[in-house]
Length: 364
Length: 229
Image 1 (cartoon, chains in turn purple, green):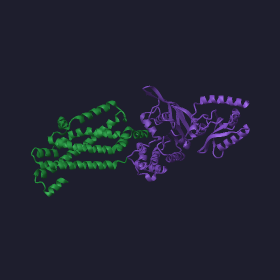
Image 2 (cartoon, rainbow over the protein chains, first blue to last red):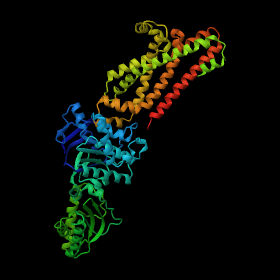
Image 3 (cartoon, rainbow over the protein chains, first blue to last red):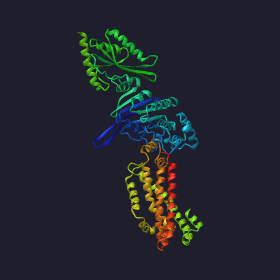
Image 4 (cartoon, rainbow over the protein chains, first blue to last red):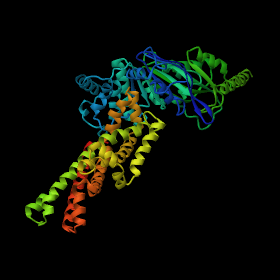
């Protein structure tokens, strides 16, 4: 439904050229909710502007519903935009229009007749649960209600794609949950494809099926939630399943184990805890649990556990044992290694060194 | 209405007040009314063009913005009395005469429209740029953005600006009246000042104050009613 290929956007700055987007590939299937996460400056906003054809990319292709956006003329682009529903961070409702008139706005732009407009508006306000506030002005609505009107407005022209640009960033936690549930509900009922831009990783775990992590205009991690979260060294997993580093480093060789599974039938937790029990028996050593985070997102359960092996245990053996049971294992030799550990390459060399040391210890 | 009351009570034994004043007030209303209308039709598009052609506008155009800005500034920098005299040939060309309330409408409009245009520009500038961009993203054309976003969203400010402009036109009209336009200004100068009829001067001033009050009050109420921010 949404297909972005090798998208580049270069801005000219005084200090030379700045690539806001540097070769982005992104595919979102019909009916999927895809999250795009990244810190500010990662290129999220530029990506949105390219997807709505407000900004012309330097190179690359943007296809929405099979239509190439980058090569369209102005009038064609305007028509294409009407096929994309857009939800904004600050909603951007027209202050001097009632909720109903705001929802009707895109229909007016598209030249829909008044009677049809009225019927569709009532239907949409009903969908977002604001039928009784149709005649209220935005100033009379709460932040959450305003965003509901924003979502109804975005859906007015029956778009195939809903682009949500930080839809909950200006809202409190409770309202955020309500809005995210509404977005999910809308997807389930209408089958729209949703691209959700956010800087809050918590939003991703709430609603997204798949996710892209942007960093410095590039795709740092991408895939469905399970594969990204269990990927070795995943930044997103660290954000979503944070483990506080222990206050005192113990005399352990530390392993980090990630797992994902269906919940509750083929419970990942179950599989993992079973594996740990087996590990203790297999190694005949005391395995300590140093920290962990287990959460259920939708039907999936994800977890990260940090376990400590006594220095006498064979780390390579333990690692192989856990991997054989479908768990992702990462070696952090120092118990002090935090969630903000350095780059993966460094970790790998450290892991290798640790494995040698531990192996030697076991041999003695 | 102070005039009607005054007549009914027979407070004034001055024939100028009893007979000429209603007529002069009507002329002033006529001058102010038509000039305001033309100012609206001329100043609103001018102000919107000033905004849309600005560097942050919908369709930035350096040349258009500068040219319009220059025209507006020239109109605003001329003292009204000088403008009044300077445009006499043009007035004569349009109306056929340069004397009387009809003739005064031309310089009044030319004097007030640039002023109003600037007020419209600043009102339009107050509309949140995010709201404008949201409309563009939703597929609005430039004309639709102006007609459905810029004007409706800044309407309360535009109305306030228009009210200020109409009040300015009232004061300009007195000046135009004194040099041959008729109306209350003419009455005040030719009777109140030149013929030392102080009562005429006082009553004229009262009528003008009342007129301005009514205009301002109407404008304020309208702006408040339409403001839902």
